[in-house]
Length: 188
Image 1: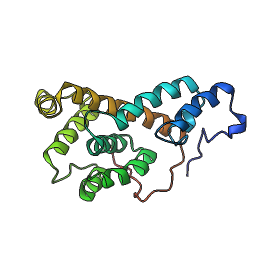
Image 2: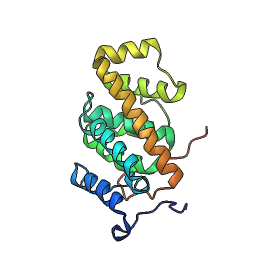
Image 3: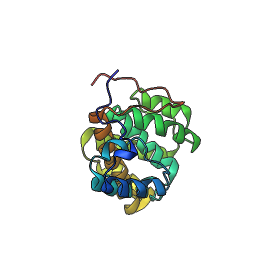
Image 4: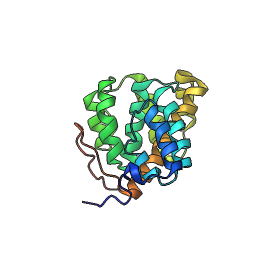
């Protein structure tokens, strides 16, 4: 098992700047300094800007919770990010993403049956990560269904959770207890 490079800092060791920025997160909808923000506490201002973006993208985006959770899972799978998977797979299921869809994504496969809106999100996210762009066909399907704001928010969700994935993969952030099975490591 990998050792967490940037484990939680005891609150009594926080600087005034760390305490000020951590308190903003603790007072917000998350209610605690959760996994992604533990390593980011080493750069309090960056942590605060990240959490503000994340608060919008997670709780108030134009797609709604079910579809944003699906996008988060696709991003976690792309980065093999165990913390995000452990946190968001149960939330995605609770919000109505089918167990079979979650299982297929975990295995790096396109789910065989999804509602049309989930198919658009899946195609958009997969192309964005795999191809580093989105085809005209997929762009048109996304903007027709979600509008320009929805497409931009979907890009934002992918980018934000890719950032958190990079932070936690590099820091080797400890994976919290979860009802979700860990992501298998896929051949690249």
